[in-house]
Length: 182
Image (cartoon, rainbow, N blue to C red; front, side):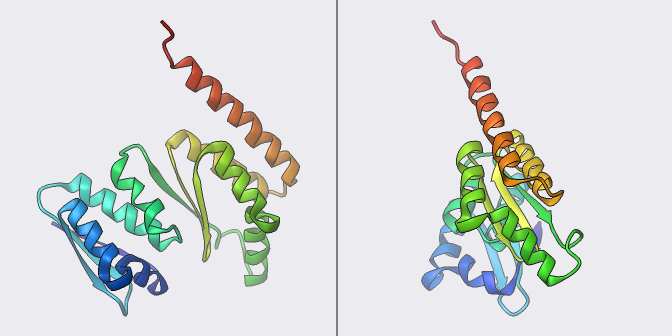
């Protein structure tokens, strides 16, 4: 069965990679075929007998299309629990200027807000086009989605940082609770 995904045309080159190496690597790693239409941004994915693998490749390609590097996006193929979540900002921002302001709040001055969120919650975040994308485990993605919503609703960066630090501590404690000490 063949599935397809459409990504921004300017990201097609990233999926193909230098001399076609990224595309070739994905095909070899997954034993699936990618057929790329550079002019439309459409990519057909064909995997023999493995619909789950097909879904994971589609998620990987979407992640690259949403601004993640191939190295970060390819982690989706190695970890079944890793999820891509895309938040569409076009419903919230009514003008290009407002969209820029919102993206700026999410990224923070010199990228500080995004970096802090990534390091505290252990996720990857990409702000690209009219979207914010998160690459992490479901619990982590929920935390980042909440933090982004707080920023969109006008919360101060300080309040969001406090929220993220609190959630960081909770994640650490839940990881410690799951370890059996003998």
